[in-house]
Image (tube, rainbow, N blue to C red):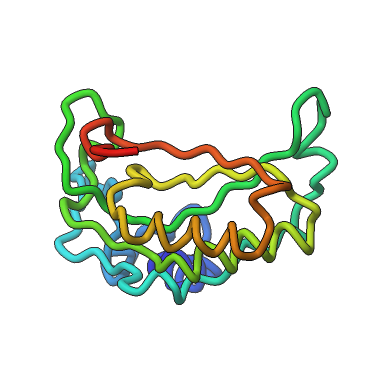
Length: 168
């Protein structure tokens, strides 16, 4: 997220012939130089506090196209995690940072509530690589959902590593 705006600003006055010139000034960008050498960045800027990430503005999407078939209910995703402490050999996130950064339960609930009230969403996917990694966060979120009464009207799916589930 921290790379996109500087990259777009950088590319705004470039053309096909000169877009690589100076590209190494953007932290976190890997690219093939004009001589064929691969530029590999050494620094990767990232959002440290995920509660600072704005909610997705779905007004920018045509949700009718997004939910085109209407055979299944519309599902919106909420992402409250970056990184993963595991190095599973089968995982597509093999190159991911080994740390984990989590948004708070309050942030996740505010996202869910916002999409529920503004878009009529009833089905949500928590798109974290390992949603149950913090039992405390999941418990707090569930308590918020239950106390709001939304638990009677929404459905949620999530992904997790089986070993993180140690109780009911």
